Amino acid sequence: MASKTTNPFTFLQQVRAETAKVTWPSRRETVISTVMVLVFAVIAMIFFFTADVAMGFAVERILGLGQ
Image (cartoon, rainbow, N blue to C red; front, side):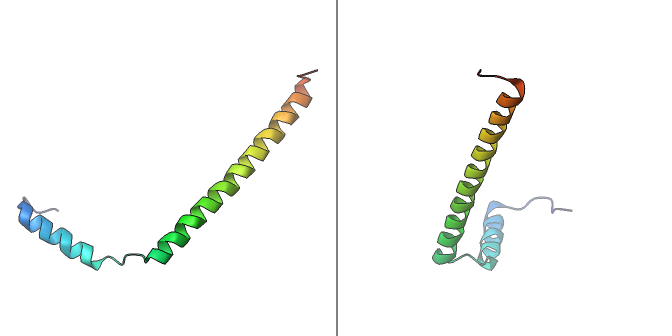
């Protein structure tokens, strides 16, 4: 269970101590991760756009729309 109450000064000390334990990524790692996310987002965008167009075409052909 959590302690009853902690004063703000003690809380901030604990936050600072926990933050010091964090292994922060380097600038290079951050840039690489950002580029990877953007590349995969573009790949997903292309995939879903292509799937949408293909399914739309198939539905038009099946239902005979646009004739």
